[in-house]
Image: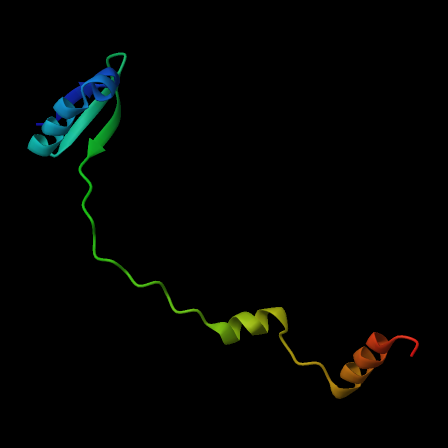
Length: 83
């Protein structure tokens, strides 16, 4: 059986609601007599390692193909300005 508490009980009498939660495992919170929220105990799952970053794929997303020698020379000449 689920325990029932109001939003006001949660705000004003939290230790009572916490004991209900520890006893029953779940508390249904009501607002103006209507069930609104379900409060459950937090259970920590196994920690997952973040996925490895594929730096090569990330680099290729910015520059999918290398520039040619002619394009590199044109870029070099454009960056030199009027020297």
